[in-house]
Image (cartoon, rainbow, N blue to C red; front, side, top):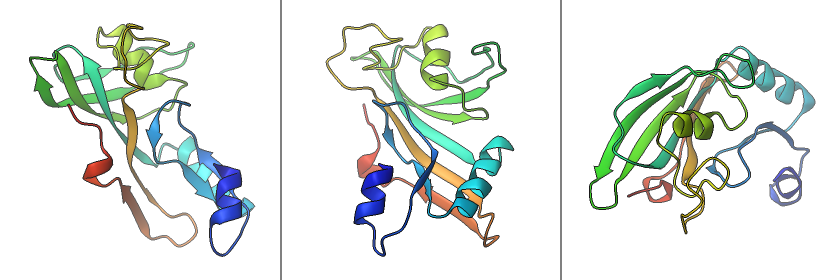
Length: 162
């Protein structure tokens, strides 16, 4: 992605990835176009001053919870609410807001809570035909360079559905 951004954005400029996603996930990543911007944005992540929201499809009928299961010995918190449930498919569409950003945090939290993400070949059932149904759909933060609030939300047609 970084190389693509460097070669295809106009005007051409360097690209430094700030926010990554699991390989099979979809949605936003955050890219800085200077070392100064990259460092400042990375610092916001370290301070947990960037709001991150995800849309996820899981197996089962989910009830809203906050999950605080440690990951690799580190505290991690995910706030999960149900948007919709399909009784025929036995799947729930969720909104997830994470306070921390541990490796595979959402996938691991949901799986350990009994709600595997559809298409998750690592922590899921292994029987799904779909790709991973996990999408980074919202980022919000105060720009460390301009001081202006920034909010980025995926268009509805790009969000996972049941």
